[in-house]
Image (cartoon, rainbow, N blue to C red):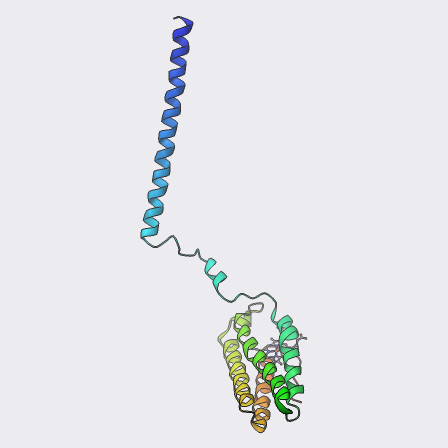
Length: 179
Ligand code: HEC
């Protein structure tokens, strides 16, 4: 066999390998594409993986004890100062308003604490609901500028703080003073 012929033979083998390789990779691609289309048609493509769904909901960043220190305690101190005596004028009521509605909204964060096992119980959720509702009713009294009602409802709110502390951490959690 001449060198020329051998070269031609080799070249054609290489060329057909390339063509075959391309064809099979195109086949793979179309197989992937149609699988993707099937998934999309079945509505599975946008479905989050298990665990991924949590990204779109409340997520705990800090531990409960930290949250009590950073949010609950300072807001409670603000509130106690603001309503210790009848708020004076617009500025006084505004201070009370800010403090109580901060408390209202942070009570919602209690539902998403998970750093201790008992925070996943129904009782924890119930105590959270009690505290949140107590806070909201203080808020309503503040909006009405009804000082006697604010005081009365505030005392119930503090009882709800202490009820949860007593229930879950009787030795750890400090007793929240009413005044
Ligand atoms: C649903 C339960 C629950 C409610 C309601 C609750 N707490 Fe707490 N709190 C805890 C727990 C549990 C601790 C102990 C810390 C821990 O181990 O997470 C704590 C601790 C605290 C501490 C001590 C923080 C520290 O470690 O220095 C303060 C202050 C506090 N809470 C304030 C409040 C106030 C004020 C309210 C009401 C407006 C309130 N808490 C309502 C569960 C609750």
